[in-house]
Length: 270
Image (cartoon, rainbow, N blue to C red):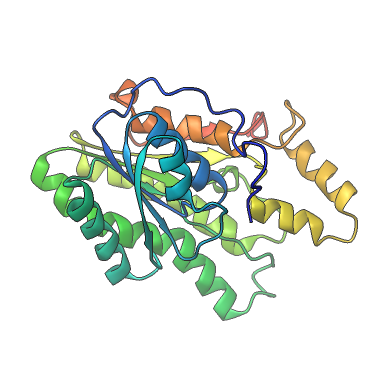
C-alpha cells in the first residue's frame, strides 16, 4: 500500500498544460511508475483512464487525481487479455469521448536463469511485459488510425539494453519491447508516434518488497543503488514519469522509435 501521510510524489511540480485536452490510458496505473505518471498526466491537463489488475494504492489513483483537481476513471482489467484491453479503450471513448495517448506500462519480473525458470513463470512475464503491449496497441490502433494521429509509449528497461544475471525472462521481454517499439514506429508513422522509456532502478513498491525480502536488505539496497552508477541512488517514480511526459507531449513531436533512457548513468558504458 502507498503511504497515506506525506505526499507520495514530492517531486511532482505544478502542471503547465502540456497535455491539455488530451485523453490518456495508463496501465499499471495504481502503483509505482504508472501511479506517478497517471498523476502527472492529470496535472498536465489530461483526462486519465487508470488501468490496473488490482487496487494497490491508498487512496486509489483516480481518487488521488480527483483530489488534485484532475479528471480520471479507474478500470480494473487484466491487460494480458485482448478482450480486457478492448474494454479499457472502450472505457476511454465512452467516458471521455476520445483517446490520444496509450502508456503501456504494466510489467513484472521473475528472477531465474533459463534452465531454472518454470514454464508458468516464463509465460507470466512474457504475457505481462510483452503480450500486454501487443494487446493494448491492437485495441488502440484502430481508433488512432481513424483519427489520423496517436501516441503510444511502452515501458521497457535498462535491462532491455544490457543484461544482468538471473533475470532471463525480464531481460528477454524488455529487449523485445525496445525493438517492437522501433518496428511499430516504422509501420505506423508519421502520424502515430511510438516510443519507449527505459528506467534504471526505481523506488517502486515492487522494488522495495524485493529489497525487504532479501537476506540483508541494507546491503541489497546499497547494491541496487550502485546500479545507477553516476547518481548512486534509486530513481523516484516521478523522475521516470517526467520522461514519459516528454514522450507524450507535443514537445516530442519529432521523436519516434526512440528508447529514452532515464537511469542515473547505469548504461553509460553500454
